[in-house]
Image (cartoon, rainbow, N blue to C red):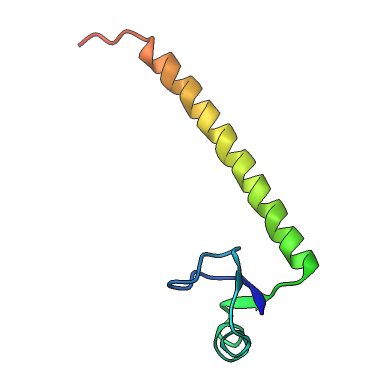
Length: 79
């Protein structure tokens, strides 16, 4: 059964990961504890869009940090 992890699970994955697990493990352990939900087409698309949005934000923050670093590198500092 494919599930979408809601929380980190040791040796399985992190929140948002879509993983294949045994049916019994999903139904008897992961789902009752709120660690995972059944992967549906809509759920997988939602997770993918969240991951894409997150990567865009990370790239924008990285570019901004590089710009600040280059401005600071060219600024002379006297002690």
